[in-house]
Amino acid sequence: MDAKILMFIVIMLILLVAGIIIYKKGQ
Image (cartoon, rainbow, N blue to C red; front, side, top):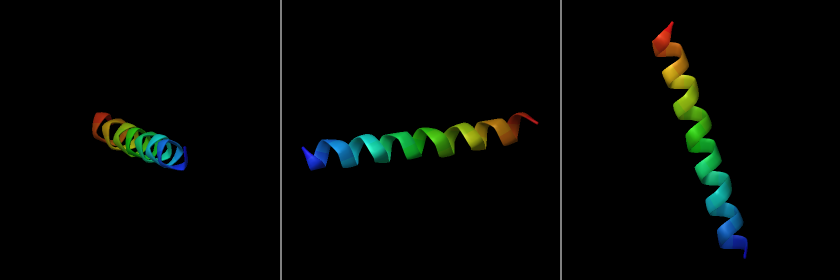
């Protein structure tokens, strides 16, 4: 159960960072 939570958090962080990078490149 903890592993699934950690994977979920990691995926969310990756998506957040990717979104910021795409947003900055778009400017």
